[in-house]
Image (cartoon, rainbow, N blue to C red; front, top):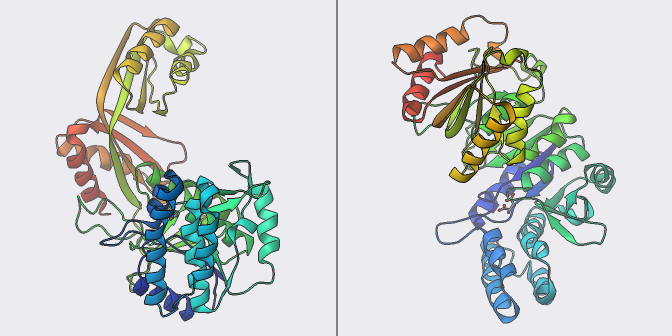
Length: 436
Ligand code: ASP
């Protein structure tokens, strides 16, 4: 049995909603459906963005702004042949609007969309407020686990709105943007689904950036760990928090494209062991994907006998903590260490350097503001000699200076630092080397 989530683009027009209905009907296992609010179209904004405008307005203006949301849903109802299907719900929301909270208003896109789809496919609507629980404004996973499991027990053929839940006071609370992915994962875990299908508008995760490499292909299978590495470098097909509920329950995620049924999508499996089972990869290359990001800073610190100074690294890092700067990597030598961190403003940077000088009294300290990081990801690298050598050789042949190298003991990712100006060339060279 499957839990299925459809994103905003899939729910954006009457045609796409009819398509979603077809997809659900095609597979009897698709019994638990989670939906986002209708997304952007050529002429219209995302419903959630429209609702943000509604929530930001007061009194008459709030009611007026809500009218465009009403028109959008009426057109969707008409388009799928369900005239007036949401009239009751819309009237109720209008009534609540003057004193409604921000989260309540934002959540109505998913609420209405789920009602519409449930009606269209003859499934039962179950409100996310009764399944997904918050404590104040913080998501409460333990409580949700039991409430959601009990709420869905014995049910078949259910549509649930994504993106929100409710707290102990009965108030609606939303996740961060894109949070319907999380709702889908919560539902998948609650019903112990065999798979969590996440329908979106892309074919899946790509082996590399298709803007740089036109022949980039879709990755057929990824592990959660590989996904984490890629998401860190900016691959954002899924909400980052959508993984944890299904990962613990060993449920794979399948990214599929509503608009391209021929695409087999990307499966994300909980562990490396799954790669050997029914989810094995078509491609047996050691590398699964290569991704990168520019504009990191790096601080290079030299001090002789650094290795003998107990607590040196901790004291350096305490300065970064003091200024709230996120540290990305710390490659080190015997008498030197480099801290790679996300770009910060000049004032913070200067304070940071001063703080490190005070704290550890280095012989020399310097800062670069032009570091790009490239990560080569793949379980296939593990225990296979030669990957690092190939990467370095390729960069050297392309006359690209390697400024940093970091490989964790997990051996599933290799991180290379080059100058921002060499970023694209390095990425293309590495993609060529590993044929991803
Ligand atoms: N509708 C919400 C958003 O636009 C949640 C979601 O689509 O997942 O962020």
